Structure formats: C-alpha cells, structure tokens
Image (cartoon, rainbow, N blue to C red; front, side, top):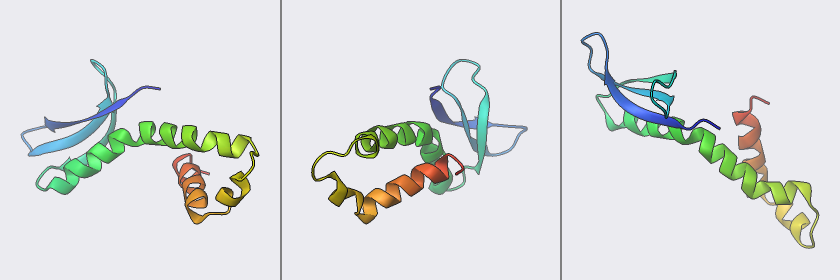
Length: 95
C-alpha cells in the first residue's frame, strides 16, 4: 500500500492549499482539499491522507471476526458497532 501525505502548497499565486499526494518523492497528487483559510481544510486533509491506513487497520481488526466463528463471537457480531464498521469498510470500497 502506498501511504498518502497531506501538505500545504502554494499554487498559481493563490493562498496555500491542502493537497493529498503519495508519500514519496514526486508522488502523484490524490486530492485537493481547498484553500487553507481555516483549520477545517487541514483536518480534512489529514483525515483523507490517513484513510488508506485507517481502512487497512479496521479490516485487520475485523478479519478474525469475519473469517472465524469462535465461541462468543456471534454475540459481538450482533452489536451495532460491528455492523457500523463493516458498513464503513463497504462504503470506503465503493460497495
């Protein structure tokens, strides 16, 4: 997995913008989060940059529950938090 990074950049004499790009030298741009006049742009950019790693971590946490049926797991699978996590993964993957 290629990691992403959020950076403030100056484009065409405009205000600094928050850009998401691959976290490597010359990494391709992923997203433009807008002008950084507020902290909200910075927060959104950091969240977007962390999204692939957050998805991978959530999938790793849920994998044993999805792929195995250990004693007591069925009770946890009925919990709303489990279903919310599964739905978040599906949303992130476009399902």
